[in-house]
Structure formats: structure tokens, C-alpha cells
Length: 490
Image (tube, rainbow, N blue to C red; front, side, top):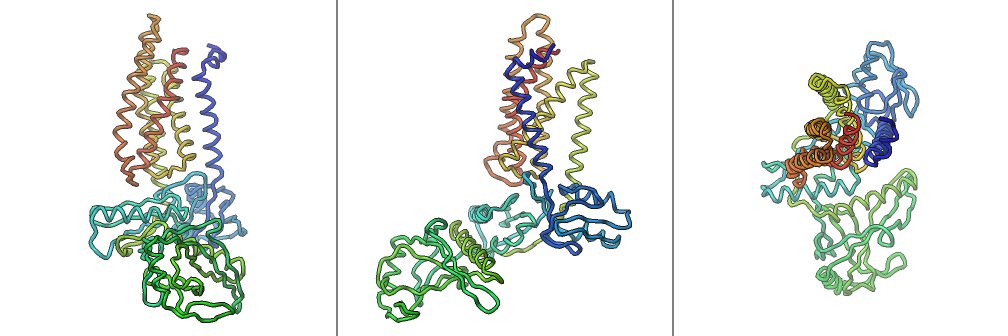
């Protein structure tokens, strides 16, 4: 069978085009990885590691592989973005067990592979299962708003919430347990709470007010806007109607400021313009300060402080105060070993399938075609997962392997139907029958994992998502291509 006959079949042509695009995208995503030092005793923090003794590093697994391949050397030359560092043998243990690294890549790895922090939270009061789930959702919304990747958050039946975040996002831990109880007072009068306001950030609703030197530092002010509901606006008018007017810094203001509190901590205090006395005002600005050794640093700190407060207000408060009852680190070395074990297991399964199929059919074409389909489904599904920013934790990888290997049954059904129908020249009927059987099998697979998908359970969602993607690719692309190739070759 010549190549032209394959190219005339649009299903086969489309299959090979998508496979090549996915393969190049996977290779690009893997090779574009960078490893950064988050915390270390022997290397500077926020440093990219390029190589160890000329062993190139572009992933968590290659980091540990390079260490162990050079563990018996008298010295380790580590090339980084901040120069080359030479370590002696007694320092090698610091690289393995006391250096936290994170992986920056198109591929978003879970904390069980790339490492991170595991937090167990417990509330200060008894919560119902619904309140615990609500608290988990508030925390998830906050971290998503901060742009955190690769997070796992799940409540337990005992009222605990488990949070996994990457090493690079450790600075956000205080915001995870921030209850977010917000209110504003004029004198001793509470004029509104967090439930009375809609925060607005961006455009004309926020901006830098200015910076000024203070000793050896700079202080900058950044504002964003709060829109009050009618009840809160009326409270503001009532709280200000009996205040007196004072002159300060060349302007006329009321003698009491409006003070904003978050979890009983004063986060901002502003003078109220005299013309707002007794007025029903529905738009209020809140200002946040930032301090830095340079003006640019102070601007960035002010912006970050304002944005962080905005995120807390936008996503609501927790139903109770939470404490961290346990905080531990998840070293990436564990994920490296687990992922390596999965790779070995997948290779052994793959070889076993080839041997068994060859022993049954005594034709090399059958195992080669099925192997091509298995590999292509993995490559294409992996690329789609990267493109949609799926977090690749251990369960997600198992989902791809599961979805791929269950397709062997479909391909064997198609092979048997083609081999039986070919002598009678009844291929079309056999192919339709095979595709119907394949469709039923795929529907059952999707239904079996769909509850985990819609429930949003972090432990199983990655598995469910990748199973659905893999079997979907199988039915729409790879298995029709397999049938058309098998029809021509077998």
C-alpha cells in the first residue's frame, strides 16, 4: 500500500497532522522548563539552575538525576543564573534534602510531583459540612485570584480543610487563613461591613496616588474603589451628619476619619471631605500604603497590598476563623520517585502488550498499529492537558494511562471485525459495528468518572479530566484513524 492512498483518507491525514503538532508542542513544553531555587542553604534563593557538572537541568526529575549521577564526584559545579557555585561532598546532602525548588514551565505539575506545602486547617468553631465546603471554596477563589497554579483544596468529613500549594506561593499562606471580616467605622459608628460593598479594581477605579520619601525609604499610596449598597450609604450619611468641620493641610474635612478594619486590624484611615457631611455616598475610596527602599519598590508594594485586600473583599469572608493545625513540606524528590515508577510501569505494560499481541496474531502489523494508537493518544492528550492548564499530578498521569490502555479493547474489537469481514468484502458493516461497540465502551468510561469530575474533588478530578480527554480523543480521532489504517494494511 503506497503513501498516496493514506493521504487521500482525510481521517488518517488529520490524525498524523494533529499527532505531529501535539508531539512538537509536548517537546517544546518539556524543554522550556526552568528550575528555580525557592530556599536553600548552599545556593542563592530565586536562582535558576542550569546544570550540575555539565548535566543539563530542566525539570525536577533531571535535578535529582543530575545530583545522583554526580554524587561520587569530588566536587559539584553548579551553573546558575547568578554564576557558578562549587560544592564539596559534605554539602551534597543540602542539595537533596534542604533545597526547595520549583519548576517553571508550560506544564503545571501538582505539588505531589513538583513539591510544595501541605496545610491542614481547622476552624475555631464547629462547622456544618456545607459551611466547611463554603470555606474551602472561598480559599480556592482567593488563591485563584492571586494567580496560584497547581493548588489542591479539599474539605474532610471531620471539618478539616487540606490545602496543597507550590513552594513558590508560600508567601500566600497568611491569606489562606485570613477570615476576611471587613468593616468601616466613623468614630464609634460602624457604617458598613464586607457584605455591604462591591470592590472595584482596575481602570479608573484604582491607581497610584503618589509617593514621598521617609528617611531612607519611600512610602506610596494606592487606592481602589468600594461601591456601597443603599443601606450602607444611608448609614454613612447618618454617621457624618453631626460631625464638625476642621481645616487641615489646606482643605476642609470632617473631624472624624473613616477607618477600615480587616479582622479587627486597621488597614486604612482616611479623612472625609467636608462636602460629604450627611450625604448619601455610594462610592468610597480605600487607600493602602506600601514601603520600599526605592520608589519603584514602594509602588509595587502598595499595589500588591491594595490588590491583596481587594481579593479578600471580592471573594468574601470565611464562615469562621481558621488555624493551621499542621504545616509540612512535600519534597519534590518523592514525586520524582513516584513519577519514575509510573514511567517504568507504563513501559513494562507497553512491552507486555506488544509481546502478547504478537503471540496471539503472529503478525507484527497488529501490535505495531495498536502501539502507534496508544502512543498517539498519550501524546495528544498530554498536549491538550497542557493547553488547557490541567494540573499534572500523579492522579492526572494515571488518568492518561488508564484512558489510553482501556482503548486496547476497542482496537482489538476493531481488528477482529476487520479480519473477519475482509474475506467476505464486508468491511463497511464491520467498521460500523466496531465503532458502535467502541462508542458504548467510551460512554461507560466517561459515566464512571463523571461524578468525580462534577464534584470537583481535587484528589480525583485530574484523573477524571484526563480520562475524559483521552477517551474523547480516542473516539473522535485516533480510533477512527486506526480502523482506516488497519483496513488498508491488515
